[in-house]
Image (cartoon, rainbow, N blue to C red):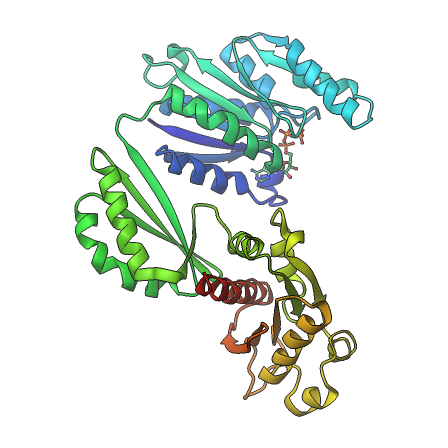
Length: 422
Ligand code: ATP
């Protein structure tokens, strides 16, 4: 099966919006064994969209477009495609009712132009959009307009905003693709998420033990991100289950506690789950991460049951006033030191009466480094009733990567600690 993706939007061509659909959709489709063979981005003019779709249909069984389903003058995808395929557009009463309900629930009048979003090309399947007004659409393409001239093709149109596109894809496109293009052979794709190891170390640990399975057909892939490496296992055919099961045992044996989750699980979700199960609580004292650790944890539903709060104490004064870090400690060792990290964590734990507290203090750069404490130096402390452990890290990256990596390391230390107590 050949799949092509067309992202529409002049904002993509102008570099105003990062084309995250491209990455997200390719990943989701690859996990369904539908690897995208070509990606195109075009400006939102009818001519560009028509041309891109027409060309893609000569090559692909399934073409997915994103963007341009809204009510504004630059939203032309639906009409351009319907015209190209020679399909009439008809107002769909159910879609119109959903749009009216969307506005009524928000106590807002429905702009007249929004009615256009209820126009559906004849014969199209409507893919409901509970997070917006324009639904996704799936249209069957006649054999003479599609790839081989023999098989029908499918064209799926999805709206631009990610918070609308992603649920439509997960809830409607995935089942539709599975139904329209059933896999000819078993296919299993698993992603294991690791933290704390570099990509080459991960590779070194697993490559040799997995070699015979790779020779038997297992595909092995790596994806490195700040502070984490994902390992992807893909197997096909009648041995897929067996290969995956054997590879999983080897991965777990080789990587052990460095694996923090599977598929889309995040380290912060693991922490919230573990703390909730143990009925324990957490506080944070962040300096150089500026609240990133709290941000990540508060993205997890249910975080309020375990996270008491976060002190973002960037200056020495705030470290003293809010947390109670001693002036002598700051003067003697400096704000970026093992001693200050220790006091920050212990003070945060004491002030909030939480079970655990994490603190971070470091030099993000580009200025402020010294020969003893160069840019990238970070101290992370984890305080509990039993003890306080401080680790020194070195993350000499740009400021944002520094914050991301440090946040990941701090979360990982707590995760390892909680898992060791299981
Ligand atoms: P709307 O009803 O919001 O107009 P639409 O289906 O017409 O939806 P667009 O107008 O093309 O979609 O895009 C709406 C917004 O969605 C863009 O401003 C942008 O923020 C986001 N968006 C569009 N395409 C992409 C993309 N490829 N990657 C990431 N975000 C995107």
